[in-house]
Length: 184
Image (cartoon, rainbow, N blue to C red):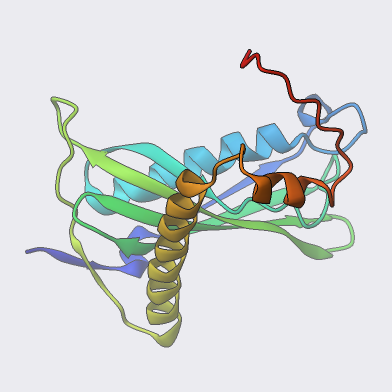
């Protein structure tokens, strides 16, 4: 099996935020940032795997700080985890006021990408060489996130919204429950 280091996967992009990227509130539109993140995740995963890659899932996108028009947004991506054909790409988004030099962390996210061959079938990716404590920590945290996601998915499938327990849970929220015999 072939192995590559995390360093072999690193990709950086910087984009100057323009008025056309803003939302109605005058800040940079979150959808535009997500689009850039998807692009860098693709570039990172494809660079690492040597294959065409598709986005399988996006985990934990929390917008921590708004991005202003005129700021320089830099995204840093690297492979945090590899499976047989999947990779978790960690992305850090920062924005810089280019006049003052002030840099703020805007968000971090994890994109699961899957390598595909020419026929569109999944294909194997190289193993990952962990050269630092940070590489090791990121790999282990990716495993933990996947375990938590699987457990959450199983718990969610088991949830039945028609039980007395669910009605008790709903009583603590700002909802009015009007049940009918119609399941529309």
